[in-house]
Length: 401
Picture (cartoon, rainbow, N blue to C red):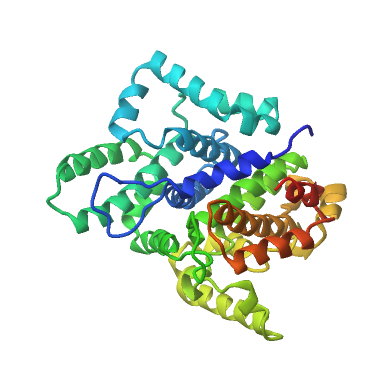
Protein backbone atom coordinates (compact mmCIF):
# COMPACT_ATOMS: atom_id res chain seq x y z
CA UNK A 1 0.00 0.00 0.00
CA UNK A 2 1.18 3.54 -0.74
CA UNK A 3 1.39 4.53 2.92
CA UNK A 4 4.32 5.57 5.05
CA UNK A 5 4.86 7.38 8.33
CA UNK A 6 6.86 10.56 7.90
CA UNK A 7 9.57 11.53 10.36
CA UNK A 8 7.77 14.84 10.69
CA UNK A 9 4.67 13.02 11.97
CA UNK A 10 6.78 11.02 14.45
CA UNK A 11 8.13 14.32 15.73
CA UNK A 12 4.78 16.14 15.74
CA UNK A 13 2.92 13.54 17.78
CA UNK A 14 5.48 13.96 20.55
CA UNK A 15 4.47 17.63 20.77
CA UNK A 16 1.57 16.52 22.96
CA UNK A 17 4.11 15.81 25.72
CA UNK A 18 4.91 19.54 25.85
CA UNK A 19 1.26 20.62 26.00
CA UNK A 20 0.11 21.50 29.49
CA UNK A 21 -3.52 21.07 30.54
CA UNK A 22 -5.39 23.13 33.15
CA UNK A 23 -2.61 25.72 32.95
CA UNK A 24 -4.98 28.39 34.20
CA UNK A 25 -5.54 26.50 37.47
CA UNK A 26 -3.48 25.52 40.51
CA UNK A 27 -2.03 22.09 39.70
CA UNK A 28 -0.25 19.92 42.26
CA UNK A 29 1.18 17.83 39.37
CA UNK A 30 1.83 18.34 35.66
CA UNK A 31 -1.06 17.29 33.47
CA UNK A 32 -0.20 16.98 29.77
CA UNK A 33 -2.29 16.47 26.66
CA UNK A 34 -0.39 13.29 25.77
CA UNK A 35 -1.26 11.67 29.10
CA UNK A 36 -4.88 12.76 28.89
CA UNK A 37 -5.27 11.25 25.43
CA UNK A 38 -3.64 8.00 26.59
CA UNK A 39 -5.92 7.71 29.61
CA UNK A 40 -8.90 8.49 27.40
CA UNK A 41 -8.08 5.60 25.04
CA UNK A 42 -7.66 3.13 27.91
CA UNK A 43 -11.10 4.13 29.18
CA UNK A 44 -12.43 3.86 25.60
CA UNK A 45 -11.16 0.27 25.54
CA UNK A 46 -13.06 -0.46 28.75
CA UNK A 47 -16.28 1.09 27.45
CA UNK A 48 -15.84 -0.61 24.09
CA UNK A 49 -15.45 -4.06 25.67
CA UNK A 50 -18.91 -3.78 27.20
CA UNK A 51 -20.39 -2.70 23.88
CA UNK A 52 -18.60 -5.54 22.09
CA UNK A 53 -20.01 -8.09 24.55
CA UNK A 54 -23.46 -6.50 24.59
CA UNK A 55 -24.03 -6.14 20.88
CA UNK A 56 -22.72 -8.95 18.77
CA UNK A 57 -25.34 -7.96 16.22
CA UNK A 58 -24.61 -4.25 16.55
CA UNK A 59 -22.92 -3.51 13.24
CA UNK A 60 -22.34 0.11 14.22
CA UNK A 61 -19.79 -0.82 16.89
CA UNK A 62 -16.30 -1.04 15.42
CA UNK A 63 -12.88 -1.06 17.09
CA UNK A 64 -11.21 0.47 14.02
CA UNK A 65 -13.60 3.44 14.18
CA UNK A 66 -12.75 3.93 17.85
CA UNK A 67 -8.99 3.67 17.27
CA UNK A 68 -8.98 5.97 14.26
CA UNK A 69 -11.40 8.40 15.90
CA UNK A 70 -8.98 8.58 18.83
CA UNK A 71 -6.07 9.27 16.48
CA UNK A 72 -8.02 11.92 14.55
CA UNK A 73 -9.05 13.69 17.76
CA UNK A 74 -5.46 13.48 19.04
CA UNK A 75 -4.17 15.14 15.86
CA UNK A 76 -6.81 17.86 16.11
CA UNK A 77 -5.80 18.58 19.71
CA UNK A 78 -2.16 18.97 18.63
CA UNK A 79 -3.25 22.12 16.82
CA UNK A 80 -6.12 23.34 19.00
CA UNK A 81 -4.81 22.60 22.49
CA UNK A 82 -4.66 26.30 23.45
CA UNK A 83 -8.41 26.73 22.96
CA UNK A 84 -10.29 26.66 26.25
CA UNK A 85 -13.02 23.98 26.23
CA UNK A 86 -15.77 26.56 26.54
CA UNK A 87 -14.50 28.37 23.43
CA UNK A 88 -14.03 25.13 21.50
CA UNK A 89 -17.58 23.89 22.25
CA UNK A 90 -18.99 27.30 21.31
CA UNK A 91 -17.24 27.09 17.93
CA UNK A 92 -18.58 23.53 17.42
CA UNK A 93 -22.12 24.87 17.74
CA UNK A 94 -21.54 26.95 14.61
CA UNK A 95 -21.43 24.43 11.75
CA UNK A 96 -19.79 26.79 9.26
CA UNK A 97 -17.24 28.11 11.73
CA UNK A 98 -16.34 24.63 12.90
CA UNK A 99 -15.87 23.41 9.31
CA UNK A 100 -13.58 26.35 8.57
CA UNK A 101 -11.61 25.70 11.75
CA UNK A 102 -11.13 22.02 10.86
CA UNK A 103 -10.06 22.93 7.34
CA UNK A 104 -7.38 25.18 8.83
CA UNK A 105 -6.30 22.39 11.22
CA UNK A 106 -6.00 19.98 8.29
CA UNK A 107 -3.82 22.43 6.37
CA UNK A 108 -1.55 22.67 9.43
CA UNK A 109 -1.29 18.87 9.60
CA UNK A 110 -1.27 18.12 5.87
CA UNK A 111 2.48 17.91 5.36
CA UNK A 112 2.84 15.50 8.31
CA UNK A 113 -0.07 13.18 7.53
CA UNK A 114 -0.27 13.21 3.72
CA UNK A 115 2.34 10.38 3.44
CA UNK A 116 -0.26 8.18 5.18
CA UNK A 117 -2.15 8.23 1.90
CA UNK A 118 -5.18 9.89 0.35
CA UNK A 119 -7.60 7.43 1.92
CA UNK A 120 -6.36 8.12 5.47
CA UNK A 121 -6.55 11.88 4.87
CA UNK A 122 -10.05 11.48 3.47
CA UNK A 123 -11.15 9.58 6.58
CA UNK A 124 -9.56 12.23 8.79
CA UNK A 125 -11.44 15.07 7.10
CA UNK A 126 -14.71 13.14 6.94
CA UNK A 127 -14.55 12.41 10.65
CA UNK A 128 -14.98 16.08 11.52
CA UNK A 129 -17.35 16.91 8.66
CA UNK A 130 -19.74 14.12 9.62
CA UNK A 131 -20.97 14.59 13.18
CA UNK A 132 -23.03 11.38 13.22
CA UNK A 133 -23.81 10.48 16.82
CA UNK A 134 -23.03 6.76 16.62
CA UNK A 135 -21.91 4.41 19.40
CA UNK A 136 -18.21 4.71 18.52
CA UNK A 137 -18.25 8.49 18.86
CA UNK A 138 -20.25 8.19 22.09
CA UNK A 139 -17.63 5.83 23.51
CA UNK A 140 -14.86 8.29 22.64
CA UNK A 141 -16.88 11.18 24.05
CA UNK A 142 -17.59 9.32 27.30
CA UNK A 143 -13.93 8.31 27.59
CA UNK A 144 -12.91 11.94 27.05
CA UNK A 145 -15.31 13.00 29.80
CA UNK A 146 -14.04 10.43 32.31
CA UNK A 147 -10.37 11.25 31.67
CA UNK A 148 -11.11 14.97 32.05
CA UNK A 149 -13.12 14.38 35.22
CA UNK A 150 -10.23 12.32 36.64
CA UNK A 151 -7.94 15.33 36.16
CA UNK A 152 -10.53 17.73 37.59
CA UNK A 153 -10.72 15.72 40.82
CA UNK A 154 -7.00 16.41 41.29
CA UNK A 155 -7.38 20.12 40.49
CA UNK A 156 -10.43 20.52 42.72
CA UNK A 157 -8.72 18.92 45.73
CA UNK A 158 -5.84 21.35 45.35
CA UNK A 159 -8.11 24.41 45.18
CA UNK A 160 -11.72 23.53 46.13
CA UNK A 161 -12.85 27.16 46.36
CA UNK A 162 -10.92 28.38 43.36
CA UNK A 163 -12.35 30.69 40.75
CA UNK A 164 -14.56 28.82 38.31
CA UNK A 165 -14.49 25.48 40.14
CA UNK A 166 -18.26 25.44 40.54
CA UNK A 167 -18.88 26.22 36.88
CA UNK A 168 -16.44 23.54 35.71
CA UNK A 169 -18.03 20.95 38.00
CA UNK A 170 -21.54 21.82 36.79
CA UNK A 171 -20.43 21.62 33.15
CA UNK A 172 -18.85 18.19 33.70
CA UNK A 173 -21.99 16.89 35.41
CA UNK A 174 -24.11 18.11 32.50
CA UNK A 175 -21.84 16.39 30.00
CA UNK A 176 -21.94 13.16 31.98
CA UNK A 177 -25.66 12.93 31.28
CA UNK A 178 -24.98 12.88 27.51
CA UNK A 179 -23.44 9.42 27.85
CA UNK A 180 -25.83 7.76 30.25
CA UNK A 181 -27.05 5.39 27.50
CA UNK A 182 -23.56 3.93 26.94
CA UNK A 183 -23.56 0.61 28.77
CA UNK A 184 -19.94 0.89 29.90
CA UNK A 185 -20.63 4.23 31.59
CA UNK A 186 -23.27 2.54 33.75
CA UNK A 187 -20.86 -0.32 34.53
CA UNK A 188 -18.18 2.12 35.63
CA UNK A 189 -20.66 3.85 37.91
CA UNK A 190 -21.86 0.55 39.42
CA UNK A 191 -18.56 -1.29 39.92
CA UNK A 192 -15.77 0.28 42.03
CA UNK A 193 -13.24 -2.30 40.81
CA UNK A 194 -13.60 -1.04 37.23
CA UNK A 195 -12.96 2.50 38.41
CA UNK A 196 -9.94 1.17 40.32
CA UNK A 197 -8.56 -0.30 37.09
CA UNK A 198 -8.98 3.05 35.33
CA UNK A 199 -7.32 4.77 38.31
CA UNK A 200 -4.43 2.29 38.30
CA UNK A 201 -3.80 3.00 34.63
CA UNK A 202 -4.04 6.73 35.34
CA UNK A 203 -1.22 6.48 37.88
CA UNK A 204 1.15 5.70 35.01
CA UNK A 205 0.87 9.43 34.21
CA UNK A 206 3.19 10.06 37.16
CA UNK A 207 5.87 7.48 36.32
CA UNK A 208 8.40 9.25 34.14
CA UNK A 209 10.43 7.54 31.46
CA UNK A 210 14.24 7.90 31.73
CA UNK A 211 13.70 8.97 35.31
CA UNK A 212 17.48 9.05 35.94
CA UNK A 213 18.05 11.54 33.09
CA UNK A 214 16.87 15.14 32.77
CA UNK A 215 14.83 15.46 29.56
CA UNK A 216 12.62 17.90 27.70
CA UNK A 217 9.91 17.00 26.95
CA UNK A 218 9.26 14.64 29.82
CA UNK A 219 7.21 11.62 28.83
CA UNK A 220 5.35 9.38 31.22
CA UNK A 221 4.92 5.63 30.91
CA UNK A 222 1.24 6.23 30.08
CA UNK A 223 2.00 8.74 27.33
CA UNK A 224 4.66 6.44 25.90
CA UNK A 225 2.10 3.62 25.71
CA UNK A 226 -0.22 5.74 23.55
CA UNK A 227 2.61 6.76 21.23
CA UNK A 228 3.55 3.10 20.72
CA UNK A 229 -0.11 2.22 20.13
CA UNK A 230 -0.72 4.89 17.50
CA UNK A 231 2.49 4.29 15.58
CA UNK A 232 1.98 0.50 15.70
CA UNK A 233 -1.47 1.00 14.22
CA UNK A 234 -0.22 3.27 11.44
CA UNK A 235 2.54 0.80 10.55
CA UNK A 236 -0.13 -1.92 10.51
CA UNK A 237 -1.99 0.07 7.86
CA UNK A 238 1.25 0.41 5.92
CA UNK A 239 1.74 -3.38 5.71
CA UNK A 240 -1.91 -4.03 4.82
CA UNK A 241 -2.74 -5.80 8.09
CA UNK A 242 -6.23 -7.25 8.53
CA UNK A 243 -8.57 -5.51 10.98
CA UNK A 244 -7.96 -7.86 13.92
CA UNK A 245 -4.22 -7.52 13.44
CA UNK A 246 -4.50 -3.72 13.41
CA UNK A 247 -6.64 -3.77 16.57
CA UNK A 248 -4.36 -6.21 18.41
CA UNK A 249 -1.24 -4.25 17.50
CA UNK A 250 -2.83 -1.01 18.71
CA UNK A 251 -4.01 -2.36 22.06
CA UNK A 252 -0.79 -4.26 22.67
CA UNK A 253 0.97 -0.93 22.29
CA UNK A 254 -1.55 0.78 24.56
CA UNK A 255 -1.20 -1.77 27.38
CA UNK A 256 2.30 -3.21 26.92
CA UNK A 257 3.76 -1.35 29.91
CA UNK A 258 0.74 -1.72 32.20
CA UNK A 259 2.66 -4.02 34.60
CA UNK A 260 4.94 -1.06 35.34
CA UNK A 261 2.07 0.41 37.37
CA UNK A 262 2.99 -2.37 39.82
CA UNK A 263 6.78 -2.57 39.37
CA UNK A 264 7.79 0.93 38.17
CA UNK A 265 9.75 1.61 34.98
CA UNK A 266 12.87 -0.56 35.03
CA UNK A 267 15.37 0.71 32.45
CA UNK A 268 16.83 -1.73 29.93
CA UNK A 269 20.45 -1.58 31.23
CA UNK A 270 19.20 -2.78 34.63
CA UNK A 271 17.02 -5.52 33.12
CA UNK A 272 19.94 -6.89 31.12
CA UNK A 273 22.71 -6.30 33.67
CA UNK A 274 22.47 -9.79 35.20
CA UNK A 275 21.75 -12.96 33.20
CA UNK A 276 18.22 -14.12 33.90
CA UNK A 277 17.14 -10.87 35.59
CA UNK A 278 14.87 -9.88 32.70
CA UNK A 279 12.94 -13.17 32.89
CA UNK A 280 12.74 -12.87 36.68
CA UNK A 281 11.21 -9.39 36.32
CA UNK A 282 8.71 -10.69 33.75
CA UNK A 283 7.69 -13.49 36.11
CA UNK A 284 7.21 -11.02 38.96
CA UNK A 285 5.14 -8.75 36.69
CA UNK A 286 2.96 -11.72 35.76
CA UNK A 287 2.40 -12.58 39.43
CA UNK A 288 1.50 -8.99 40.27
CA UNK A 289 -0.92 -8.78 37.35
CA UNK A 290 -2.68 -11.89 38.65
CA UNK A 291 -2.75 -10.51 42.17
CA UNK A 292 -3.58 -6.85 41.58
CA UNK A 293 -5.11 -6.35 38.12
CA UNK A 294 -7.15 -9.28 36.85
CA UNK A 295 -9.50 -9.12 39.81
CA UNK A 296 -10.45 -5.58 38.76
CA UNK A 297 -11.70 -6.49 35.29
CA UNK A 298 -14.27 -9.02 34.01
CA UNK A 299 -13.04 -12.57 33.42
CA UNK A 300 -13.87 -12.25 29.72
CA UNK A 301 -11.19 -9.58 29.36
CA UNK A 302 -8.35 -11.64 30.85
CA UNK A 303 -7.36 -13.42 27.65
CA UNK A 304 -6.91 -10.17 25.72
CA UNK A 305 -5.14 -8.44 28.60
CA UNK A 306 -2.68 -11.32 28.87
CA UNK A 307 -2.02 -11.05 25.14
CA UNK A 308 -1.35 -7.32 25.53
CA UNK A 309 0.92 -7.57 28.61
CA UNK A 310 2.58 -11.04 28.65
CA UNK A 311 5.05 -11.93 25.89
CA UNK A 312 3.86 -8.72 24.30
CA UNK A 313 6.81 -8.57 21.91
CA UNK A 314 6.14 -12.00 20.43
CA UNK A 315 4.23 -12.31 17.16
CA UNK A 316 1.35 -14.77 17.50
CA UNK A 317 -1.76 -16.18 15.87
CA UNK A 318 -4.75 -18.00 17.33
CA UNK A 319 -4.71 -21.55 16.01
CA UNK A 320 -7.87 -23.36 17.13
CA UNK A 321 -7.99 -21.53 20.47
CA UNK A 322 -4.25 -21.86 21.16
CA UNK A 323 -1.83 -18.93 20.80
CA UNK A 324 1.02 -19.98 18.52
CA UNK A 325 4.25 -18.00 18.07
CA UNK A 326 5.07 -17.11 14.48
CA UNK A 327 7.13 -14.49 12.69
CA UNK A 328 5.42 -11.39 11.34
CA UNK A 329 6.63 -12.31 7.87
CA UNK A 330 4.85 -15.67 8.14
CA UNK A 331 1.72 -13.91 9.37
CA UNK A 332 1.80 -11.58 6.38
CA UNK A 333 2.23 -14.47 3.96
CA UNK A 334 -0.24 -16.99 5.37
CA UNK A 335 -2.29 -15.78 8.34
CA UNK A 336 -3.22 -12.15 7.70
CA UNK A 337 -6.93 -12.82 8.29
CA UNK A 338 -9.25 -11.88 11.14
CA UNK A 339 -10.02 -15.53 11.88
CA UNK A 340 -6.42 -16.08 13.03
CA UNK A 341 -6.51 -13.11 15.45
CA UNK A 342 -2.88 -12.17 14.60
CA UNK A 343 -0.63 -9.82 16.57
CA UNK A 344 2.79 -8.45 15.56
CA UNK A 345 4.78 -8.37 18.78
CA UNK A 346 7.95 -7.84 16.77
CA UNK A 347 6.49 -4.68 15.29
CA UNK A 348 5.31 -3.37 18.67
CA UNK A 349 8.83 -3.98 20.05
CA UNK A 350 10.41 -2.10 17.14
CA UNK A 351 8.00 0.80 17.68
CA UNK A 352 8.70 0.72 21.44
CA UNK A 353 12.40 1.12 20.64
CA UNK A 354 11.66 3.84 18.08
CA UNK A 355 9.70 5.73 20.74
CA UNK A 356 12.71 5.49 23.11
CA UNK A 357 14.94 6.80 20.32
CA UNK A 358 12.57 9.72 19.70
CA UNK A 359 12.55 10.58 23.40
CA UNK A 360 16.36 10.75 23.42
CA UNK A 361 16.54 12.51 20.03
CA UNK A 362 14.05 15.24 20.98
CA UNK A 363 15.74 15.86 24.33
CA UNK A 364 19.12 16.38 22.65
CA UNK A 365 17.47 18.53 19.98
CA UNK A 366 16.00 20.63 22.80
CA UNK A 367 19.54 21.33 24.06
CA UNK A 368 19.85 18.66 26.75
CA UNK A 369 23.44 17.42 26.84
CA UNK A 370 23.63 13.91 28.25
CA UNK A 371 25.99 11.00 27.65
CA UNK A 372 23.13 8.56 28.27
CA UNK A 373 20.89 10.21 25.68
CA UNK A 374 23.64 10.44 23.07
CA UNK A 375 24.65 6.81 23.63
CA UNK A 376 21.05 5.60 23.46
CA UNK A 377 20.56 7.27 20.07
CA UNK A 378 23.78 5.79 18.74
CA UNK A 379 23.08 2.26 20.01
CA UNK A 380 19.51 2.17 18.67
CA UNK A 381 20.48 3.51 15.24
CA UNK A 382 23.27 0.95 15.02
CA UNK A 383 20.98 -1.92 16.05
CA UNK A 384 18.35 -1.02 13.42
CA UNK A 385 20.63 0.24 10.66
CA UNK A 386 19.80 -2.64 8.31
CA UNK A 387 16.73 -3.99 10.04
CA UNK A 388 13.33 -4.66 8.50
CA UNK A 389 10.52 -5.69 10.85
CA UNK A 390 7.13 -6.92 9.60
CA UNK A 391 7.92 -5.40 6.22
CA UNK A 392 8.85 -1.98 7.65
CA UNK A 393 12.36 -0.73 6.83
CA UNK A 394 13.38 0.77 10.17
CA UNK A 395 16.92 1.48 8.95
CA UNK A 396 15.44 3.92 6.46
CA UNK A 397 13.41 5.60 9.20
CA UNK A 398 16.42 6.09 11.47
CA UNK A 399 18.54 7.36 8.57
CA UNK A 400 16.17 10.35 8.39
CA UNK A 401 17.13 11.54 11.88
